[in-house]
Image 1 (cartoon, helix red, strand yellow):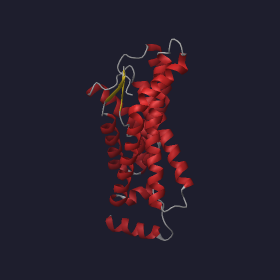
Image 2 (tube, rainbow, N blue to C red):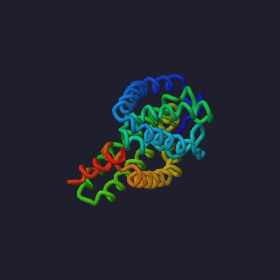
Image 3 (tube, rainbow, N blue to C red):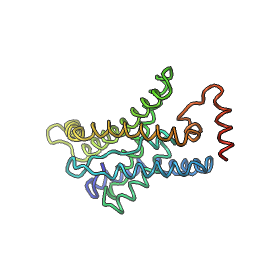
Image 4 (tube, helix red, strand yellow):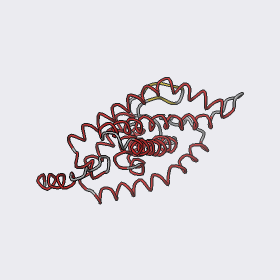
Length: 242
């Protein structure tokens, strides 16, 4: 990830494009609805897209036809939910293919499916599970643990799907699909496991900075929870800021 231009057989490229298309259409609608419902979130939406673009533009050679890098998809999924990240991730991958020759147009559907569809959903799902399991912990600890888990697993799941995509296109002569999947996954894991850990830590730092600078926005998005009696104080603070 990103899978290079022309690397997949056309049948596989077309199939992954068809699989990703409904998620992208839904994502564009969700993004439009999110902006209309909360116009003040435009800046944070842009920052989430920029975060994804910058992190996923870092290229570390991993295997022929592909590369390793952070994805940045976990942050947007946690803040705005996975459908919105499908739209932001698709824009990121499209611009990278056109401007940086990173990925490609024929492989755009496959890259979108792994990084902008599966990654955000796995990241958001794991974030919600950990957030619920850690509800008895102090909020800073609970949020930090959940965000780290979500961001790290969003990155790892992206590369798991990419390994599967490459294995389906190029099965191992002796081990078949499973053998190829294990080989691709093993090669990716050398670079991707530490990258996922680093990405999780960086995302936690970003959320903590936003907690200080944009606490009201995180409350509206549901990332932070209002304490009993804290809602009135927050509303009063928002009113003064307005």
